[in-house]
Image (cartoon, rainbow, N blue to C red; front, side, top):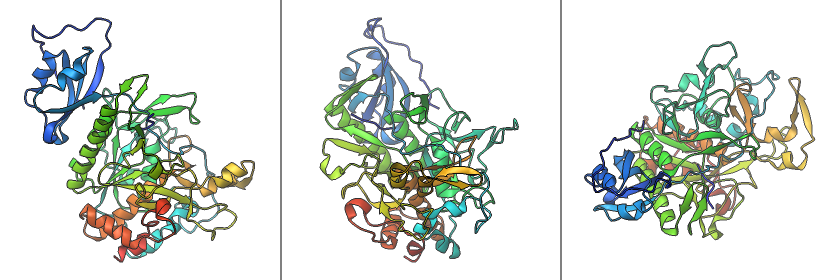
Length: 478
């Protein structure tokens, strides 16, 4: 069972010989892949003849999304010349690991920097980011696409004025930010929803601007690429769940590559059962599952070829993926993707010099999956002693929160602690941005990965840490 995560409709006149669907049949959505990454000629006509329409296409990877109420539509379209496969475009619950909005103190004790939550960012010390900054590397000239839900936009300060998050605004390219949610062209998240992508974007590239936190690459550009929508969910600890479709994610990745994103940060993922599955939106066969994986492979290979470094979350199920052959974890296991596991301290607030590279027990692992490790936060203390609190700035903060990762989020908090491989990914994205920036703003993705590998610290078993926990300063020396 999976748990993952302006489109122009084409109006068609159906042929007199088009099949007439039963009025009771629901309209379903399908993913079509053309042979050799190309769309078939006369696709709209072929779809119309079989009782369907083309909702939208992504020609760069030979993807089309079709709709039809014809129950035989999938099989009939697979017989069209130059069609490689057709699969159901079912709704997917993407997995956004560890997101739990919680207000940090609004007033902190004096910190070593005027960004007032900088002192809580143990992750920057773990990867030697300050030492990299001292070498003049800040990520200037590098573009990071945050493929996620929407970045925050709204009445940030409660004064009736709409604006972007203050930690992200200096580096945010509003004009290039885009949504791939059909029917919702707004790439930003309204104020009453969580903003997972804001937390992720801030870890990677929050500005050094006297407020909040500092990102690993504080001068890199941020572009929001929205591929998820939020829906109320009473079973979720945050009251919402994220939903999307494989086609939305693929389209977002292609778009990020086409706007010359140097780095594509994908802090989401989920399981795809190789044998198929069913959910409320329909069923996916074993063959369909293979084609859905192929779709994401096409998107990630395209982006890599265009020069983008693609970095994705390894996931938070504590699963040994080397011995879990029934499932794919996507897009971490897609082609040309760097997968990141999570590390963190235990009891950092009591001893800031404690070990920062303890493997997070929630993180997925496996030699075939994990390429690098990075700070994602550790939940051990929080789970073991949830009653432990420390009065900080007039707030009783759970002791375990300080082992998590702090970053921007939606109002009313604006900053929050969170944990997960979601938070680990932007640490790697930030280091990659520092490396690319040092090399003039353009760099072959294979070279970037090679440099990260040489600069990484060997902190343990490759099944858990891959080629090591990334090190910003050491990578600059490669």
